[in-house]
Image (tube, rainbow, N blue to C red; front, side):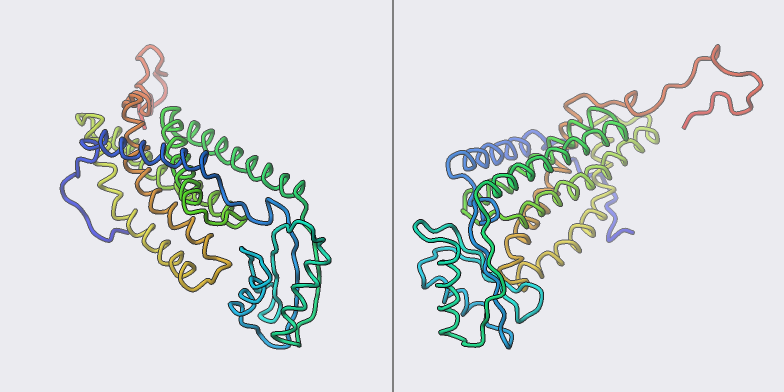
Length: 318
């Protein structure tokens, strides 16, 4: 399916050096903010108290959030859990107060605003558990990266695998850089969005790589630069349709999903925008600079001495 068709190839690779320089600067800035400002980790990673409450009617989450914040909690998450009447409150660790004391203070404040609220559960997430979650998240990220690299190496060629991984890590680091610079809360939902962006971004790279391989087989007289420009131009309509429709869904979560989905949708939005950029200007350009050529993707014709004279299909190439 095509939204539109471009008759003349766009010379993307002509500006590859400039665009990759911009990409490198953005990447370095993201790494700088990660080391200097760090990530603002949520309760799942740092430890804290989870308080579950139930109301007789669906509560106003904004009002409940301001009520809890009035107790001295600078950052607190209040969200629905299960039904519209059930609320889950995530409290950061507070020095000099136990988990039970924190839950009692929060429940008293909520009861003053709405006497119908009842305490359902109280859980304490220790720093050790948070550290284990952070370690498991890093392991998941590493396994995804290795799996993608192995897949691309088998599907295409090692040069494409290296180019695809660099482009994907470029997207991930930039997302983390945004969260470090603006000090947005980094939660398990955001980590899930980062892993989703890895798979989403590599999908676009695979489409372009596959078209490059087809072009090498189809156009024998084109240079490598012309092959890549044609591959990107011929898939740009599909890119706009895919990313546009996905971003519409993500935008609805960003605008109407509330605080629970806000940073999840924000991470996806950044990943989708930079995923398009990296697939077109980073992955393809790196593959070109690594010296990808027709011989890497098209099997050479067998020698006449190796052909079976009794085989009618001998000498045929795919």
